[in-house]
Length: 257
Image 1: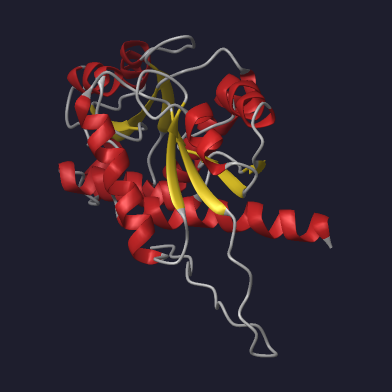
Image 2: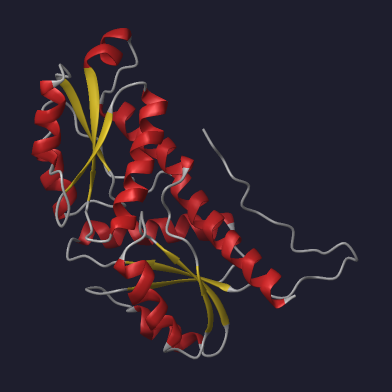
């Protein structure tokens, strides 16, 4: 499993304690499904356990409180890194989050979305194995995976999802086809039929969603064989959140130097 060290030293080479780091603001989309909010809070707890000295906050784009503008308002003019709990580039990453950040007094930097990244592939693989994925020769010969994602009209989002599908295919040794619950094609049904036409009759659905919800449930119900759980609170997810935070923090420090 890919594992990224997430606990930098707080002491510099001349033994002086570093200044307090920028706050980490985890930016979730928001959902009417209570399981989603529970998952997000559990992820925040994992992040805090790994970095107890790091100020950690939550802000939603819509549907749930606290909304991101309210979270940023409470930070005043403090420094913050906004880490999108999103799996690819798209409208929210390119427009919504930067615009909300620019409207606040906080000194912010927006980190990259979580995907694509090998840690997501680790999580997808683990969820498939939990659901019953087999690593035998028969599965490699007749198996395949549909990577079910939310979907977006932004072409960069599809590029990122295809990259994740390619990485997962390399890991599993079987075809992995991205498919979407809305706004993009192919649908999960179409992808399953296309794989069956290629002689792949053991098709699993990998849930490329950060948490349980309507889309994840609908996609899982279409699985002809097994359906994996969403990414959820797998330990690699907290690692990846902190990795994106560290990347953005390092970039911010370099720009200020």
